[in-house]
Length: 595
Image 1 (cartoon, rainbow, N blue to C red):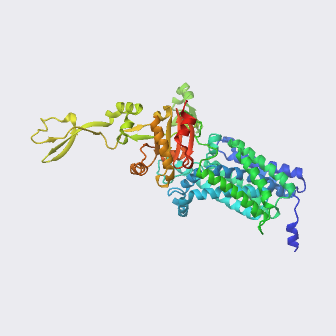
Image 2 (cartoon, rainbow, N blue to C red):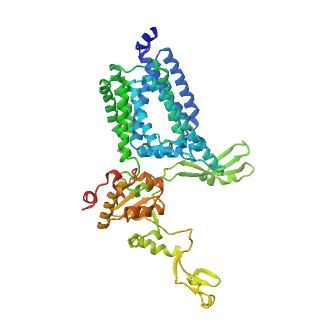
Image 3 (cartoon, rainbow, N blue to C red):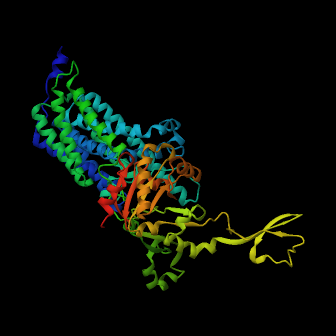
């Protein structure tokens, strides 16, 4: 009975001093930031100072918070920070469930996690379902943290989830480090390391220019684990928010959501959070049998997240962070990289001090006589010093092509294709003659055929024919320049023939026929085999030109399978998923006619 009374008493959140506890929390968070900065590879020689100062602030502030009974207040701050971040993180992934599913495929591949932990391979067929479940779980946990619903269950689920993802990012970071070490040593490395954890989908790369490195992801999860631990320790003191607490927690959490929305350049999470949190209050107060209020609130938020996830998985992301988003120019995206700046460094050992000195090439050139003195300096090595890492282009693998032997007669009449054939055909193909005799048959170059050496009495020549000079080096037409410069061009994508939405093929056939009638190029980009392509053409009477492209790249262009893109001089005018392919006349009227 006494224990029940104790649990029903609301503990004073402020502790012994609201001001001092607030300062202690600020110092603690500042300490966490300093420690993370200290361990970042870009910090350099000042890392020890940052780490020691950060640890000192964390320990001192924790002692102060314990003495001033401020840990409960700290848990409220942690709930706002983690809850707001989880809502945004979950929505970012729910905005592109297929993208997250492709990332999970990387983790569960036979040469990924499954190589060391075989049971992860069991999840590979269910990556989309798992992606949606994780998105919903993050969003529901975020809302539950902010509102204080079922906090014991929430804190346990939060802690276990973060422990798992902290281990996962540590594994990924270790894999990348081991791979780099093996490559440097010239050794074979039989693992496929994930280079981007997918924590925020493509949002970071699309908004700030790069994703978190595996090591940065690991530190992000360590910080989240620290805050989750603060919440977990205080779970027995936390109750469902009072009206007053909601007036503080909800607006404060919306500020956190707004901050991350600003970082990602997408304000939808703010509106979603408002709808989810305010809607929870309404749904929670509706009498639904004996269902407890926290469960009603959680189910409501979960349904909202599920509806959003299902919409984006069936159609396209609401916010497209990829380089192939509407309005982007493919040529510009292929040429927006920045080359790394590298300086050659000469390494000499100072024989007087015994220390090695790294001398930039220009300095060495100006003082070469100094280092040429073998009584004072000994040459050790020459190496490259990276001054700036540079940045790869946003698009690096867009190279749709087709083998010459797969070109139709109408394809060969395309001026661009005809010019490539005229320029390169003789590089790949030679004229041959087949010779038959009682001793067997042989094939020789036509220029080598001479009746002096191959008399008609012994050899029967065939008509001359053209064949590849080297069967292992087929002639491929790179269609990228044509697609970049064409006035208008349709690109249909098929990432997986076996899993494609076949019901969309009739609508796409209408667009194909309309494009042919108007003389607009229409290409299908796919990594499918030639047998699969011929099956599609025959089954759906789909007489289009199929271009081969990298399988990963086609996933990036359009998430839908199949999908459709319209380009004008390399700029993406629009894209459509398989479930909402418009008729050709609508596309022509809206985008092409009169342009």
